[in-house]
Image 1 (tube, one colour):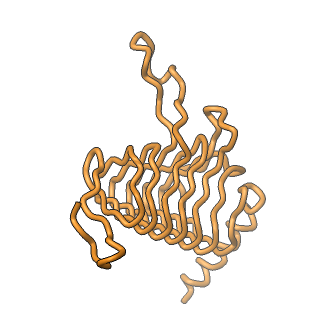
Image 2 (cartoon, rainbow, N blue to C red):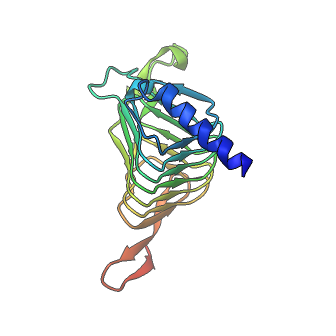
Length: 191
C-alpha cells in the first residue's frame, strides 16, 4: 500500500517537473528511471504509456529534417533498455508493446567515404517511421527506417529494414514475412 502511494506521488512529481519540457506529456503516463532523454521539446508521450527502466528516447534534428518528432501513442508499453532515436519522425501507435532491448531509428550513419571514420561522416535521414496500433515488437529487435503495420508481430532478434504490412508476422535478419492474416478466411496463413 505504501509503495502504491509513493509511486503515485512520484509520478505526479515527475509530471509537474517535466510537463513544460516535453512537446506533450500526459499526467497519466508512467515513466520509470530513464537512461537518457534528448530533445524533450520534440517528444510526445500520450496517456497510459509506460516507459520502463533504462530506456533512451531522443528526438533531435541532426539531419535538419523539417519535422523532428517522437510520439508514443496511448496505452503503449516500451520495455526496459529500449533505444528510440528520431532525427525526423517516429510515430508509435496506440497499444504497441515492445520487449526489452529494442532499437528503433529513422536514421543511419553515413559510410560512403572509405577514407574517413564513419563517426565523422554525418547522419543519413530515412523516411518517416510508423509502428501501427496494436503491434508487438519482440526482444532485441532493430527497426531501422522501416514502418510496421497494425497488429503485427516482429519476432525476437529480427532486423526490420523494409516496411511490414498490417496483420503480418515477420522474423529474421533481415526480417521477412512468414504469416499474414487472411480477412476472408479469418485465419493466420503461412506466406
